[in-house]
Length: 152
Image (tube, rainbow, N blue to C red; front, side, top):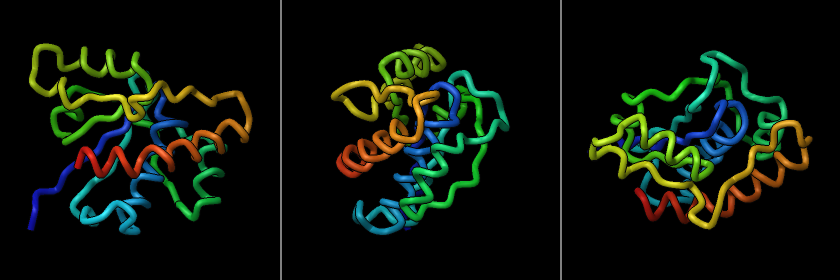
């Protein structure tokens, strides 16, 4: 049996973008849409400026629910140890990548911190209503399968 790998998604508050990415990635892996990576991949998320225990936004939960995804996590603040333990760390924006790499500056671990979408930032939908969250979910569904296949 292979070693369990961890994919860690990072955003600012860990209430919108990174939990949505976590939920969609977990579904892709469990459903076999990203092949050969079923149970041996652990998916998690955290935020550079998260308040531990904060609830995930209602709009994120709604976008996930409509995709048949149940999500019951709470916000967690990113620590250097989380980065060290992860196999790959995917950030929502370039500034998140810079911030996460700074937590492990000078360590080989900083190289595993990459942008989720190399084509550009995934903007924060907070305060922009459900359509912004739904658009984010669609973009994640488009980007994640290729990124997970490439990085795992």
